Length: 303
Image 1 (spheres, rainbow, N blue to C red):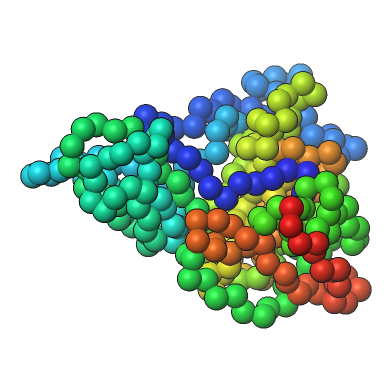
Image 2: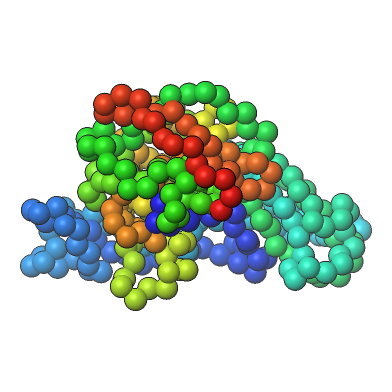
């Protein structure tokens, strides 16, 4: 994947409830299949059928921290904003002694759209952070054959397991980059529930900071019944066809491939992941492709 999708977010208290800035853009495709964007409708330049996109600047939050006054302490409560479980950690920022019960850092698994008391702050007003990772650390992967997620596109792999460009870390070691023209339909490789979806990031400009690009890839994350999650990344702006919380079936359209984020060419990044205790780890998987079972070489260790 020409982009590292981080599985953990740091949410400073001051920013935990802030909404992502957005602006309205319009997207359309010309006869040659090229995507165009405009910030207003112009009858002479923008077709009436142009798709409206609420372009965003930041990823949507995963969790929210609430500080609630109690009888003898301030209660630090974390809300899960996702329709699936998350694991969270509460810590002081910067690290410093805090009179808290339990002591910081504290961890918990929070149920879908649920809340959990992470700590009772007994004195002072420390600055706090919440680190949140999607999925439950108790996931038990099953041996499942996944469907090819680009059924209308021929098989062409840009980067496979252990690829030297960006498949060396734990989150992406077993990822596969499937080359596909922008706008190619993407389908779910397995039944599940849409846990996260980002659709409002635009393709990066030539001078945009690569570190910023890493956080601006459109994607769909689907949670499976065994606790694993499939990530479909680099979707085109406005290219998410499924909504968060929706149950999807294997083979159901969920998006359109693109070139958003830190990406050198249009492709779909597919990876199977599980929460392994406040960190995401990619998992080997079996997939049935256009010509039969796809066979990937074992990923190199380390990275």
